[in-house]
Image (cartoon, rainbow, N blue to C red; front, top):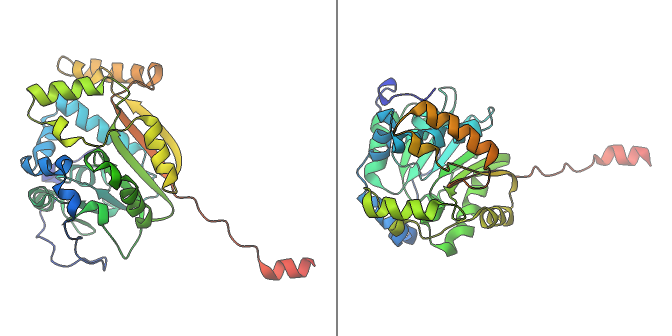
Length: 284
């Protein structure tokens, strides 16, 4: 079950990294791209407070999306990195106490919020460029929820290469991004025109299922799943959460390719072990 910020003890701002890593990477030119610059204008903790509402369209969208990410993390993952962690909602509310990790985001106010509400021993949040993040200790899994569409298109390959370097052999990537071969472009336009967030200015790197699978595969991952979710279900949450849950189940069964969001799961292949030289010579 996801946690409330009140369930986490507040922790002081981290000055050193107990994992032996260096500080967060310096802010790179990606931060000043149109897709990321707008992120600095979002109020600190905005999406975490949306999650705390417990009702409504926006709450359903964010909460069920993060729940799907959690369900696709391998249960044996005890060290997780969240690239583009924002206010820390995923790691803070969904990561079990037995696991640890690092959240990285370039937006200082969001990172400060995450530290205040969710930091604990083994779980820290760093301000820096998630596309250049490095660690002395590899991670079992990496999560990236709606970051890649904010990056300049030419930075896609470099970002995925960064993720690959962060993971152990056999490590898992769970990535979420809007599906531009769906009704999402219409939804995006409506939200940008009438809602509190301008997605048209932020989303500069659109993906279809085919493009996303191709990019992740070319980066050296083995894609095990790429599915879509959310057709109409979140909008029903304005009337009834139960109805929205029911329709979400129907959508995933009957309309698997039409959802507004893409969820991709991929793993780094484990190298084949070299044959035992002594055994081969004995056989000769």
